[in-house]
Each structure stands twice: as C-alpha cells, then as structure tokens.
Image 1 (cartoon, rainbow, N blue to C red):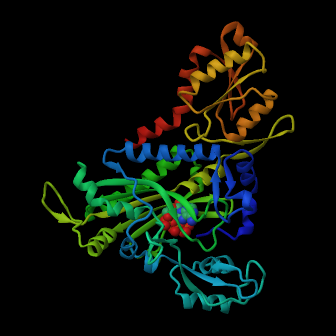
Image 2: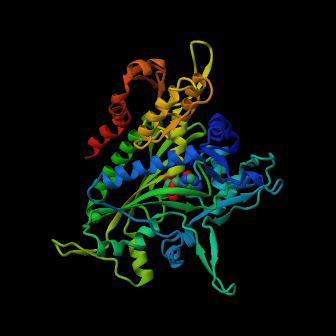
Image 3: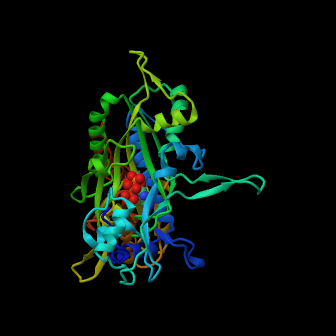
Length: 474
Ligand code: ATP
C-alpha cells in the first residue's frame, strides 16, 4: 500500500472529468446525490472493460493449452469463508478521530504520517505508534484517536425464505474461493491433468474503510483470477513463468513498462495462506500502488475445504498414481485498476502548433472502446449515403461510430478524447475516385486509401500489438 490520502486525488481530476464528460465513468446513483465510492461504467467505460476482459480471456485462457474457465456464484456456502480464513482474518485495523469522527485505516495513517510500513504490526503496536508520534487526523488536524480495532471487510446479507430466522451469507470478497469449491467438479468432468488452471472473471465486494482514488479502491469491483494447480515440486518454476506472463499481459494492453514494478512481500508480512507473493505495482499519479498480485497459496485452500466439507480433494496422477492435494499459484488482476492504469497511461494534453490544446487518450488499438469512426465531410448527399454505406460494412467487424454533426475538426477532437485510433472521412474526392481519408489519432496524419482496401488496412493496423504478443506467449 502506498496510495495516499484523498487530497491527492487532485492529480486524477482531469481524468475523472474526462471520464464523466465522455461517458466512461459516472458517479454512482448521482440523481440521488451520489452513493459514496460506487461508480457506473458508461457506454465507453463498459466497452473498455469488456475489451480488457475479452483480451485477458483470450490471452490467459484460450491462448494456453491447459486452462479452463468457470463462472461461480457470488454467494457461496457460508462455511467457505470460515474454511478460507476470511471470517477470522480478513480484517483491516481501523481507528477513529475522536474530534471529527473521521474513520481511517490505521496502517494507512501510520504509513502516510511516518513513512514506514505498518504491515505485520499488532493492533496494540499500531495504537502505540499513533499515540507516541501524536499523529494528526488528516481531516481536522487533531491528535486524538481511539484505539485501533479490527474491522472485517466482508459484506454480509441474510438468507431467509420466511422473514424469520436468517442465516448470514457473505458477498464474496475474492473470486478465488468459487474456483476451489468446484475443483473436484472440474477434475471429474474435464480432461484436465495437473498442472492446469481454472480462470474466472467476476465481481468481488469489500467493505473498505477508506475507499478512494477514483476506481482504484472501491467497494464493488471485478477480479480476473486464475488458480493454477500444480505439484508442490513445480512451484518455483511455475511462479516465475506466471510472473513473466503477467508482464507480457501488461505489454499486450499497452501499459508503459517503465511504470510497472515488482514488489516482493517480505516473509513476515505474507498472508496466512501464502509462501511467496509478488505484487506488480503501477506508478499512479497518487503513488506507486498494487495493480496485480501473484501468490503461491500452497495447498492451504483445498486442504481447508477438504477438512471443512469432509470431501476428498485429492488428485491422483494418472502416470505415477501419486495421490496429493495440488498446490496453487494464483495470478490475480483487478479490472478497475487495469482500467485506471490504462487511462493514466493514455491521457495526454498536447499543445498543438496553433496553440490549441488537444486532449487525447493514446489507447492501444486492442483496448480502445471505439476502433474506427466514420464521418461524411458534411451532412449532405451523396456524402452521407456513401459514409453510411462504409459505416455499415465496418461496424459488423469492429466497434465503429458514425458521426455527421458539427465541424469535422470537432468530430476528430471528440474521437481523440475517446481514444479512437482511426477516423475515416468521406469527402468530395471519394465521389470521384472511391478513396477516403484515414486519420491516425496519434500522428493526426491523414492518408488516402481506396475504400475497397479499408478492411485489409484496418485489420492490420488494429491487430498489430495483439498478434506480436501472442507469438511471444506460445
Ligand atoms: P490492497 O492491498 O490494495 O488492498 P489487496 O492486496 O487486498 O489490495 P488482493 O486481495 O490481492 O488485493 O486482490 C486482488 C486484486 O484485486 C488486486 O491486485 C487489485 O487489482 C484488485 N482489488 C483489490 N481490492 C480492490 C478494491 N477495493 N477496489 C478495486 N480493486 C481491488
């Protein structure tokens, strides 16, 4: 954790404003005055998210030979969370300011004020640090805090058919456990052999004490997770291989590798289930913070579920007949953090030769919500008819937009702000020689291309990064 207090969100302001203005991300329940730390993904946000998830699935599931998918329930049997250790241990330390009633994560408070890690500190140690150093409240400046206490991050709800006695059910705080619960089903129904992986994309919920930094830390988010089942002997090699794959993924989606770092968790700060964890952090405008995680979870989860359920979760090697509970390497990715990192990387305000500023999102073509926009130079026949015809051909292949209103320059700027890599304009020359202009978002250069070559040229330009990286993986 290195992200800083909410005031630092200022550095995100232009991105937050663009997201609202251009239909990427809206504040949640806005017509009711908002609902803290919830967001809606607007028409372009949803495309961006979908591109991230589709590409992830292509790269990590279809692009490998020993992977299968799963879509497990959000509500799992409550025993799941006792077995996994979440009921007992999925806690943060919180502390309240007695003066202004502000509530904070105690580790964040210590790290921000004293610039040292609070990982691994007990509640008593944290309270002592806060009192001894007279740490001030980031909201009101007072040094008058309660003692630190634990706060479980799981949201719960009640399952009841009668309205009478109810049982608590938890909204999953990670997608991983659904995979462990179906491990046996997958083994029994699929022709998989260890090593193999199960991947899942889905919602997770965490009652974070101090959410913030836009969609970086929210209470409802999507995870893309893989549980890769291995023999214990293979864990070191498998861990390295997954780490390399995660870096390739970052390249594939076009993240600037200079902003990605590895952060090894020191042994004494590892989670109860982990023998090694490496985070990939990204240099966000508010600090370098966890983007993804890679953990060697041993066979902790499967062993615990075997114990709590009374079911055997052993695997028998078909060649050696060795029976064992597989160990697990877990690469985990947050969709919202991926999206935020992509926005931070892509966002640019360029001063042009004429002194104007153009805001542009330099998304990789594979990620861009709209791949190509089609414009008639003017809203006039036969330009409109020709432009409509070209649009109708293209939009069956790529997410394309048609726009005929306003000055052409404004239409280009709008697409720049959406990160659309290419714009096609149908002008009077088109009517003469059946060529159109193809404008490149980044260079703003326009070339003339024959309409019958458009699909071929765009296919090449739009897929370049993806196929290069596919070859690296296989
Ligand atoms: P942090 O230390 O930032 O709280 P974590 O170590 O608890 O994160 P994990 O449990 O490893 O996170 O979750 C896996 C991934 O899910 C993270 O790498 C991140 O991308 C994403 N994630 C976790 N918590 C949130 C959240 N509150 N909002 C958005 N994404 C999240």
